[in-house]
Length: 439
Image 1 (cartoon, one colour):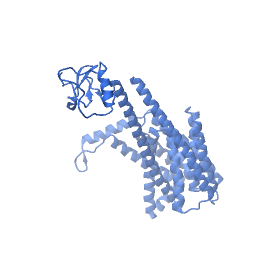
Image 2 (cartoon, one colour):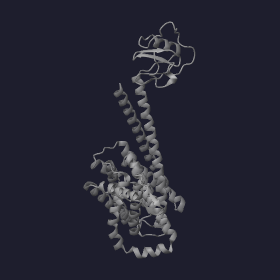
Image 3 (cartoon, helix red, strand yellow):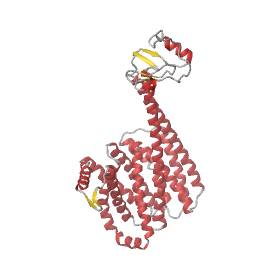
Image 4 (cartoon, helix red, strand yellow):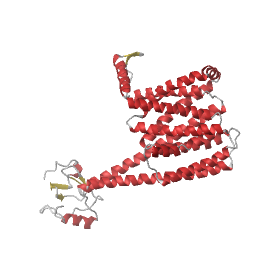
């Protein structure tokens, strides 16, 4: 039998192939290839003397069933059919993809938490400890800087490279490439997308204005605390508008977290800086914030990239925040203050930059999961922000704060366990479907 039909020469002494059901063993290694290039692996590789065969007589064949019995009784192994091997490989590939998917979610979640912790620290340091309350300047600057970062990242993502014939001199090819990239960016727009981006920009501006104004009447920790409770509006709006369903466990876990946050709020209410008007502002803020999360998810589900979304929402946000900046009268006073406090200016630029990259990471997390999971991670990092704030800025912690911490983490643990069980069940179901389809 000509052995050239083996794709791997290491197996040339293993089998001779006459037909699909006629495989003749010529070596004890029991590894083989087939005409259709599907391997026939066995549960273990055997070492020892060959199965009793003689050059003077034909080897027993798989098709006769005799060789299977000899192998099973002698070596306690079984031969897999091509179909079984294909199913096993597919199942293993799915499991590997699932493990890689979970690893990506974990790494991205940690990255989001880390960036937002730094962001939260700088926000409290600038707006509460240093009294740099130029909120209109902050809103406009964040839109403007984020737009520039988005534009740069889009050009990088399209493998845009500056080519020059000499230092500082661009070639016609590089300029043409630049124009083509801008044309592609503009072509991405449609009437529907413009409406969605405009709506999202308005929501973003409202969240900045409401969130910043609430800091004039509330403690920073109280503001962050209520900001965490936007999971409830996300669930309500998601169920009413997007017809989503949530399990009882979801509601129990969220209500438990909110109960913990209420205890935390009671402890924080002993602070002198606690206003009912500020509380109303922050409640409206969390409703608008939940709309932002759902709009983010809706746009991303409709084949918009994170960078495209960031580019256009920040561009529209620049024009929407301009009137607010001009009528606030902050331009002159803020320039004088920042000129005298250059370190504050540096921290403000770091704060804006962190906000951009943290937002891009959050959008990536939302795209590979959903709004509920992303906001769960956001709630956890906000809670850590509060705890770290107590430790760094040496604020008083009451018993209500400690009780709130315990209850909150109980609710968070319930939700994480439920999500983990759901993911495992989904993966098992997908693997089962893949196996059945192969059979």
